[in-house]
Amino acid sequence: MSIDVENLVGRRADQRWNRVSVGDLFERNTWVRPDHPAIIGQPDAYSAPQFAALTYAQADELANRVANRLLADGAGRGDRVLLYCSNSVEALVTMVGIAKAGLVAVPVNPMLADSVLKWVIELTEPAAAIVDAEFADRAVPVLDAGGVRISCIIEIGESTTAQTSFEEWVAGTSPDEPDVDIHGDDIWSLVFTSGTTAMPKASMNSHVYSYFSAYSYGMSVTRGLNYEDELVTITHLPIIFHCGHNSVPFAAFISGGTLVLGRRPDSRAIAEGITRTKATSAWLGSPAWVDEVVETALADPETIDMSSLRVAMFSWGAMRPMMAGRLREACGADVQLLEVFGQTESMSCFRFWPGREPEKFS
Image (tube, rainbow, N blue to C red; front, top):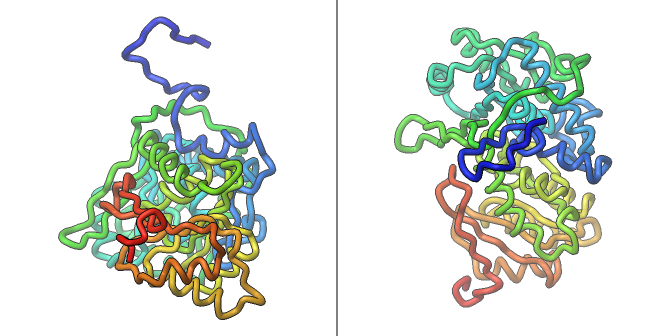
């Protein structure tokens, strides 16, 4: 191994032992707490029982299998892999696997019109695609017409399309780390804007960018904990095709904590998930969603216990002055509201802590 100890400028840290890579988020924790839970899927957010909950060692091995399968299928460094998926344990681990392989994830909102999906394909020229069964009947004809090879189907939801399942696709592939040169400035994902004023635009995320986002949010959502790896953060909001993967799952992984992942917003499922996993942080979305989860908990105190929650993060809308008080009724005096707002694809959002400025909040 050649180690440069002379040059102070012009260095390029792209060896595995000193690089910054999203693909290493799981592995770095296997050397500390390999059996600690990395991801816990809510009942609707995984396709097979073996993916329901993954330790860091299991998540890293699965991401390696994804990476090695993509490379064995012919993908080369910098090639794009389109994900036509909503939240699932498999889709999230696949994103890390794509990064491990030195490829570029292109997560796409499955609600985009067929014509927009066609345009995304023309713009990004993906080498492969991974699709949820729920959306396959709609997406496969567009992907086929665009000449995009479908690697596998994540079997969540119904489909008449016959394709290799995710479970079959990763079976038998190597669980070892792929030998790929990666630099922190390499782009690992293209996150599309919502296209409210024109066609969606692909925001280019580097490994370093995602690390900084994860660290910055990790500092906020681990407040109130004795140790950062005690973080258990829950969300049912989109984190595959939305930039939230930088701020929520990756913040959990960078801290050595646990992500609890739901398929789609459901106030009852969120409250039950907080109760079951003793979640310490929640990304709840709009104030209306905060209200719904809180009212669900207050309406059923014998079943729901959200006293473990320390940070409830929200955004996207106007607050009700009574929101903070109702949250404390449901969770106790130690919980803090955190508002984040800024440009959607830029995760360095402004933070507002209502507990610090109650008059401004009111």
